[in-house]
Length: 224
Image (cartoon, rainbow, N blue to C red; front, side, top):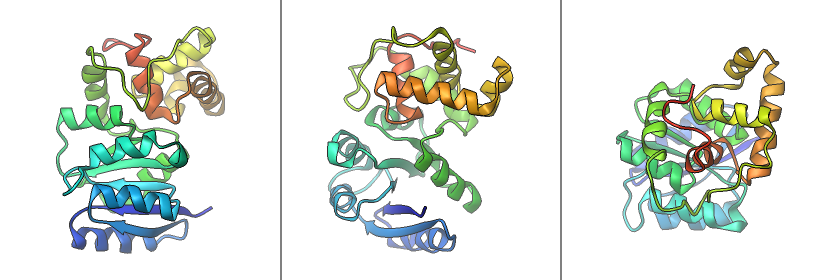
């Protein structure tokens, strides 16, 4: 299946570069380009993109606000947001995740890493591949904050002991393969437990699962 990508960046040159890269592979296509946050929201609705590649600093409405509005829109429930920005500071990472982003990357990544990130986020599998992001999530999401509208705290009682264990490891930044090795199960089994936890907690992807894990206290900065 082809991943339909919407580019949201106020720099036309960068959008053109990203378009050429994305359109060069058979499993992706750029369906629209937005220069502002409001354009990104409108085009996400009209073009039914699978994923929005979102810059943070844009005129009219910034990428964080646009991400929040997309994630809150029930008509856009299937749309993932991957934030790609020059500004990789800790506050932006935390705010992007609270806004409902499914991933956060710096523009310094290489082309192959960007393409793989798009595939990963579109599949809803993981947002925690960059090692630096793990510490940021633990530091900022563990702090007391107003409830996140994109991923409100949910009771964790419905989770089985194994699902709780898997959620804690997901929040610590472990991949399915790493969780499988830690728990002596297969990667498929690890992914199944994570997916069941997402369903029970109402998380649209692993990004929101991480947010819920920290907001509910299931995961803490000193988690494994």
